[in-house]
Image (cartoon, rainbow, N blue to C red; front, side, top):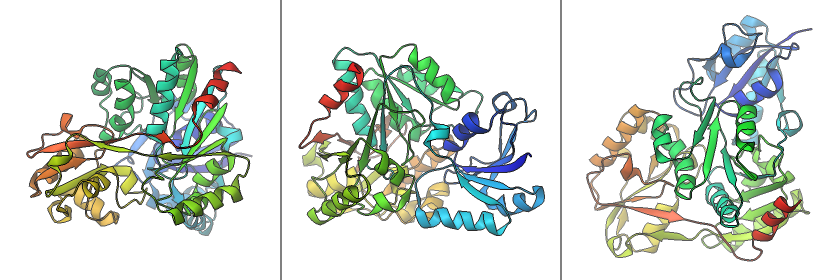
Amino acid sequence: MIYKAVIMGAAGRDFHNFNVYFRDNPTFDVIAFTAAQIPNIEGRTYPKQLAGLQYPKGIPILAEEELPKLIKEYGVQYVFLSYSDLPHIEVMHKASIAMAAGANFALLGPRDTQLTSSKPVVSVCAARTGSGKSQTSRKIAKWYKDNGYKVVVVRHPMPYGDLLKQVCERFATYDDLAKYQCTIEEREEYEPHLKNGVIVYAGVDYELILRQAEKEADVIIWDGGNNDFSFYKPNLHIVVVDPHRPGHEITYHPGEVNVRTADIIIINKVDTATKENIKIVEENIALLNPKATVIHAASPIAVEDSAAIKGKRVLAIEDGPTLTHGEMHYGAAVIAAQQHGAKELVDPRRYAIGSIRETFKKYNVGSLLPAMGYSDRQMEELQETINKIPCDLVLIGTPIDLGRLLKINKPSQRVTYSLKELDTPLDKFLAKVVKQ
């Protein structure tokens, strides 16, 4: 029997699940992908060149709102949820929509979706978007590089453009960011690694990416996105949790999967979290994964000129996904403004235009500006919004310098952050991976 299926996603996990489980699988006929979370990623086609012989016309990528209609029109028997960072209750709402329309609802786990590498793999994942994966993976990559190992970072996918051109992307220089027309969200993840002299791979086909990365790596770092679990079977699985959002480590999918399967759990940001919230996270870890090694870490914040912040009216710009589906209401820029005596945080909402205004309508992010840049048009709207806002200083808390991409008409400075272990250092665990 051939089962008709729809894959729900957000241009990442959904494509990977198709490639490793559904492509050339005669048991299933994938009718469509549905897309959500990321603006303007529907209305495309998963190319026939990537879809395999069963799909000579490719596979349509449609808006998630069309799911009930698709199920009924095509007699879809299975809906597979394949995207990340959802509250458990939202997962079941989506299940209810699928089941009410007559379909079964399913999830694919690591056994059927993780690829095995010939090289050691260290995976860096999280319980929630914005927990601190990026600075963790950067520190790990730098340690291997400084100790003489050839290290390659493979980043969770963000293929929001031409999928055929994004099948297997290799980033070695800043020029490669322009070559692949990277969005702000992509640059935020790739650029800091490039600055440290570390090669980054990303794209659509993670089997092809893995085999290419293996050719030039002694060790591969899986740099996770949102709270998804690794596409590659890890030799060491590191998971970062955030005590600013206590309880989320047990109430979000698939972050809870990461917490339950971690070898090491890093409780990050303990320097700015309350003792009560840290204790909640510790208790939940003990409940879900008592065998994991727990490391407490700080996320120290640095600014270029603290004196320039004091007494100023400040616009705080933070990482977009962390504020939107990550549901954080502050980040490094806000903390820096508070620590260094800013007079006030200027509320950007009344000045927002276009898709930036729509972001504020959709997400309750508070009086700070998410650095949304999923397209050239959205980056233009972000720039225009920033330049309309009356403030003395712009504090940029994103992992990249927006000043290199946008023309900001007022003084600005970056806020950077790193990972600092406070009890057990990561080094000894990293060394074991390459000596196995």
